[in-house]
Length: 141
Image 1 (cartoon, rainbow, N blue to C red):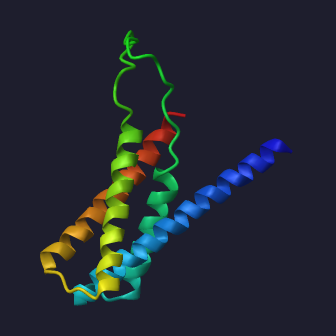
Image 2: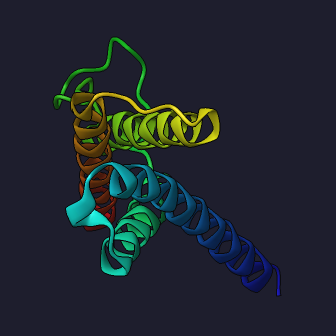
């Protein structure tokens, strides 16, 4: 019984992360779509939502490598955990771009297209890093 409750809680947590990612995707999509007329489509918003949901579902809750003391390097165990690093940087980039997008929407600012492009590129790179991190972490299990 306890295992089922823990599993349900874990699925519920991951679903919440996916919803947060989808919401971030909506904010970035709304800002970018309002600045770039070609991207003012429902399909673009859905793609942004799905990429955010997938990235946050896979990339935030990655299982870590086992910890070893700092002086333990017999088999190269002092290496950086690639999945953990990609997850951290990807999550930071994706949420930072969502934060900027929300700020621009709320403040009704009209930034230069370069800033909008940087937000879009930051979002794409961040979400891809999260997805790759999740894939790496799940392949090593």
